[in-house]
Image (cartoon, rainbow, N blue to C red; front, side):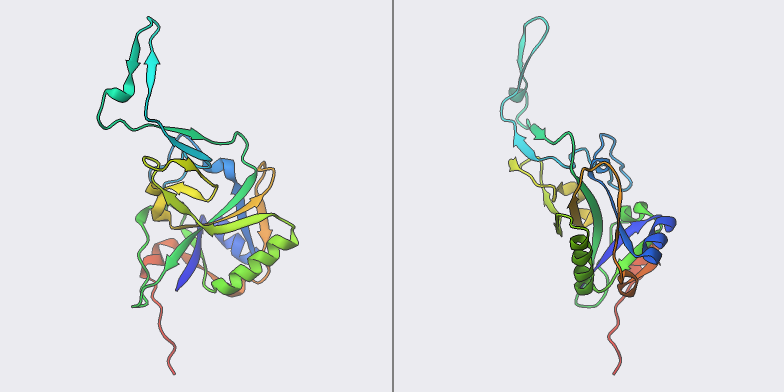
Length: 216
């Protein structure tokens, strides 16, 4: 059994719950050269569309001396990345919270807590997907939604999609919803009925959650 979590500040999460919407940030805002080590946000490889393994690398100095960098170390590892200048999507990232056979939550990584002090917990995913798709189609958005595919940039060679992410971020257990837009502004997608299938909890309580079977 799985739930979805949207983690953020108290102000934003409570507003999302009370007004029944999901917040879609610009995709470009997810990419930065300054990785946040605490939360894992601002991935410098976010939105790469190609990851090519470089087998040979040589540079020439101003004096005309050639240096074969790829031959200087047996552990040489280098990649060439491609990514668009403009990313024409908005994104909503959700954490997938799973329960084991013992009905206890599979503990989240402590770094997730740095996303925010409040969490919107969506506990009926069947209904959630119906409400989400209805909302997206009502607004006539072209969209895609699926779990993130984590890959090893040191070995993967080939094309990537906007649902790929480097595997050092796999602790985020991300489910990603993308909508095609100019990508120049944030979007609040109204989802009527969201309150009936969700609840607001403190983020530091997530690892204490436990399912209990109904007593007959």
